[in-house]
Length: 312
Ligand SMILES: [Zn+2]
View (cartoon, helix red, strand yellow):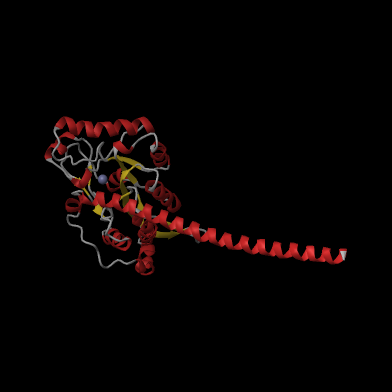
């Protein structure tokens, strides 16, 4: 009788254990389902937040003025990488004693990114540039340089990128008086200098809104550039790629953005860099490009630089 009780007790225990296990598994999957739902809600919130931010950007008159003369190129697709590799490498590569190919670019371009610094997209772009071993130029907004972002500014400088001036407030400057213009420039010059010990050497006007008074007052070269149109959230990654690759030529300065939420540019940047490399381009900062191409800037020269052609 005692034996039977023992056996019954054991059976009862086992049933309970199996039951527990099953319950446990069930509630776990329940939890998993719940948490992924939470994640997707979170994601869509983040996305819509980013979207409203980029839309705000696109309302700016930058759209009208920066698009001047920039037509999306139809010819260049990412698929063309393979085709274009051949002639490009013939042009620019030598073979050294070990039979290894050494790249010696004969033509250079400059990648530029406006509206930083920040701790999101600018950091992602710095990571890509480091991965690709490419130097670029960041046009910084003074108001964005804070104790939160100053490490990103220092990192960009330490990694060999150029820091340019994109004004203190990022307001349209073409209606500003002389005093305000001087402040807009000088505040950024001082902030950058205090962080990295060097003052920006080039200037990108916000929205490419330019007055004669700006030319007369600001003694930095005005950099415009070949527009990727990446300030417009409706312009796809592929179109951004086409705009850059279609506008590629020796001395071209490409205008792109690293404002928060600009994920399409992050997405396509590696492909852009790889294609430019495949076409035989080297990468320089804007100031380096001036030097390489033999373009001399005279203060208040009234020029707007987009492509720096080689000078004799
Ligand atoms: Zn800007």
